[in-house]
Amino acid sequence: MAPLLRVEASTKRFGGLAANRDVSLAMEAGEIVGLIGPNGAGKTTLFNCITGYMHPDDGRILFDGRDITHTRPERICRLGVARTWQVVRAFGRMTALENVVCGALERTNRVVEARARATELLEFTELRGKHDAPAATLTLADKKRLEIARALATRPKLLLLDEAMSGLTPIEAAAAVQLVRRIHEELKVTMCVVEHVMEVVMPLSHRVVVLDYGVKIADGTPQAIVRDEQVIRAYLGERGAAH
Ligand SMILES: Nc1ncnc2c1ncn2[C@@H]1O[C@H](COP(=O)(O)OP(=O)(O)OP(=O)(O)O)[C@@H](O)[C@H]1O
Ligand SMILES: [Mg+2]
Image (cartoon, rainbow, N blue to C red):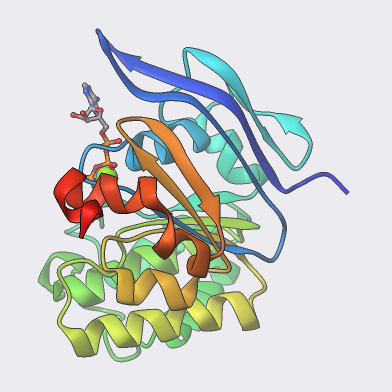
């Protein structure tokens, strides 16, 4: 069976800088893949290319067997790829419910149906009681949940989470991990999770892909990744690796 997502030698340049260089990876349906790498490694750029927000300069991206390399973002969303943003992009003046309705309207023209789905997802993401709050007034943790609810409302097969747990307190982060597990188990959504906190990403991921300076340097089980010399060097430098 073909993988759900296949990135083939994707390169994205900004002037002289290759933010992604020849990046190849595959994701099978049902996986949770952790995508890690130091700041500026190219993680968000890869998400931007997969979701059509940017297009690679070279290489191909296939989703569900279809070439989406140059497809527009709204079409990719309709095919079943959703994301959240590293810097949250909730519609601040709209209520929490309205934000999620926007996602749901991607799948239905019936507002009643979209509201019902949005209400269910606010329950699922534990935002009950906050339906009518303007999104701008929510805490960071709630805004991140709201973005997840809005993404889920588009009924994705693949969900890309860009630092959905960063900036949260340890208790909030633990709740976010539980939410990711429930999305995987109950909604059967395949996920790619960008996260800096190793204690979060390692136990959550079936497999971990590591980027460094735009290049994929490792791809394997969390157990193998934490022992990988190139990965240790990327995070700690030569001296750290020697220790
Ligand atoms: N729109 C852009 N224009 C120019 N350069 C960009 C743009 N987006 C990203 N870059 C550069 O590309 C490189 C990769 O950035 P990217 O945001 O993908 O990294 P990242 O792994 O997500 O980093 P972080 O962990 O800090 O979020 C960086 O050097 C960044 O400055
Ligand atoms: Mg980023």
